[in-house]
Length: 261
Image (tube, rainbow, N blue to C red; front, side, top):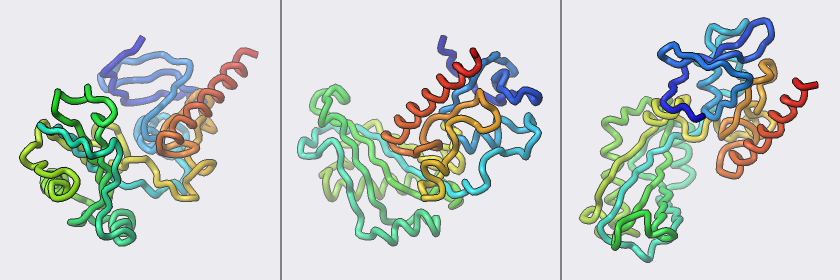
């Protein structure tokens, strides 16, 4: 059974057995459980979902996992014409490279310039848009919410700059053919996906936060609590996330076998 719109408020852990016993939503409804697999941001889970339910500090997360990945500004839109010359995947590089990365990661400044990833799924599957139309999303790396950026103000401005830049380059007359546009900012990643600081890829992929050093797929103390996704071993990105699922699957099987012997 898939139960949708169950907004989890707490994951209850029995103090004596150190096992997850139930999941409680924001309305006070609860689901008894033998184990939990959490596929969201581990930082959010450790800081909020277990609060007040452990004989430990409010967070069980390792103290060295403190650096968060960049934020993402994602612009979705359709066009009333086709751009057949545009491939399924395109990297659109701005004039600055190292300096832009420093602004995003070190200084946490939202600058006027940018680099983009442009995704055109209709290049492979025309059913993504009506006949003689196209479908796109554009991903723009930006600072996460540690920057203090007000996205209600800066979001529309950034969309305008992106559309203007693409219209002058790989998507001629985009401004005249743009339809059904909307965007997501780091603020949406925080509210919709419960991502700490609105980060697009959980904790940053530094050496000290990658692979073995990342969040564990099975909690070291609460043995029936498992994690999967970008924030855990081995790391973010589609290959990393799929690999984390395989690791977690193996750990769950081992755990279930150990409880049956």
